[in-house]
Each structure stands twice: as structure tokens, then as C-alpha cells.
Length: 115
Image (cartoon, rainbow, N blue to C red; front, side, top):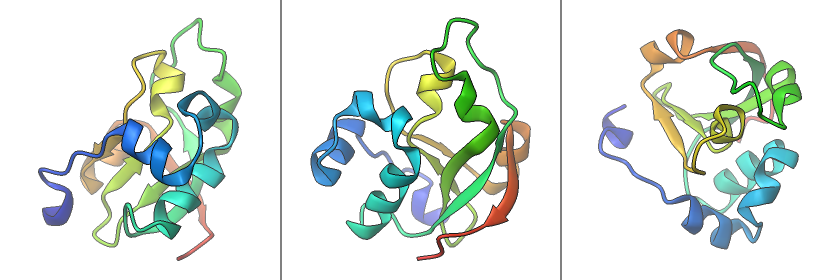
């Protein structure tokens, strides 16, 4: 996590760089993650899994939880550009240390889309 310890990535910067509106992030999560890597915003690979963390009862995106994706940096740091849609909070990029990932609801199904 050393590289990402004090890392802050604006969701507005991500949206501009990958040329996608923030409101579309929950609808195209794999594309968001892949484009973040392809445009060198972050280094890592796309991880496919299940989200077991808190979901706001009025979230329109509850179905995301069963087919969830996030980015895993080379050091294991979790970079998540869509969690806000499940929590129904202000759009932002969430970053977790590797040991926090399970505690905060991330469960890997397999490792695909390695970049």
C-alpha cells in the first residue's frame, strides 16, 4: 500500500480521463476498471468477485454485488470506482489496504483481465 498510502484519485479526473460520465460507472464497471488501468491512472488488474459489504436499501444497483469488480494494485491495494453506487453515497474512488479488503466486503471469485 506504500504507493497508495496517501493516494487520492478524483472521480472527476477518472471520468475525464476514461471519457465516461460518472453516472455510467455502475452500468459499465468492468470497462471503468479496465480503462483506469489502460490510461495509466492506476497499475493493477481487474478482479472479479462478490461484494458482501453494506448496501443502501434504496440503491438502484444492488445487482452489482453478485458480479462485482474492482482493481487490485500490485501490492494488493483495492481500488474501487463503483462502491459509492451500492452505498448510495457521493461518487468517489475507494481505496483499501489489502488486509482491509475482506473486512470491507470484497470476496474474490477469480483473477481475470490481468494487465
